[in-house]
Image (cartoon, rainbow, N blue to C red; front, side, top):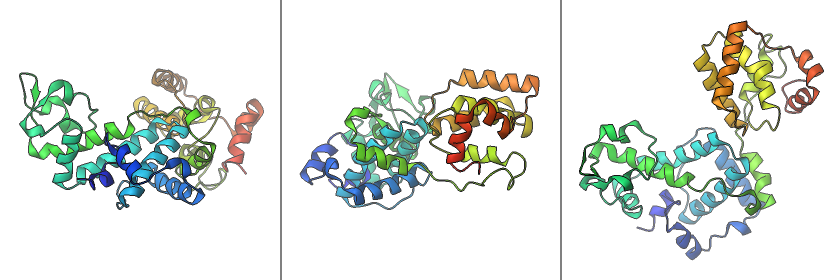
Length: 294
């Protein structure tokens, strides 16, 4: 079922099929890279329901999109890329789902899958967890109504497997276009349009902030979420963690939680832009260049 590569360009033998079709990511020109970046941007924005391209185009997109994702190296983006293919697998016709199971060594999950094989795939849907499924003598049985979700879980695992690709293997041209794949947002300019703290709402919408992420959390984000918005610590930590991942920052959840609890305990308020400009002019200037401050 060769057409399965349109749905599943991440299949183990898809690279052979790509070579047969003459797919060569290294020869992609600016027009192709622009189209890939635009499509990837929609996926990273959460648009998972896009039409299928030709088999050759889907294989080329997969290879180039993975390179762009690796250049961005943001866990949130890896997750959304995986969920795009998970949704596609979940909604694929049943014969394509069964081909996916067969090609990845699961066979027919209704007839039983060895536990070790089943556990080799990350499960992103609750109904694929073992406590929802019958297990007997080390074999997992998957009922019909769970098969779409299992296909999504398998697709997710394979789509993000091997990411990130080492940066030295990614051409500069692809790294340049990767920046165009970062989701765009409509930002209010300055603080006047959304009240006193409108500029923090602008910062919360940004992606790809290259530096000063911890300081931004300390000065603005956490005090705003807890003191101004009145959110509880768990919710504030969750929002701050998602924001940090969008910037490509690896901030420990324990650090975020400690900061949140300190803000709540002391009733800390966000700093004014003027204070940050005096204490951390590099952070202020960077955000100014990104359109937060005029």
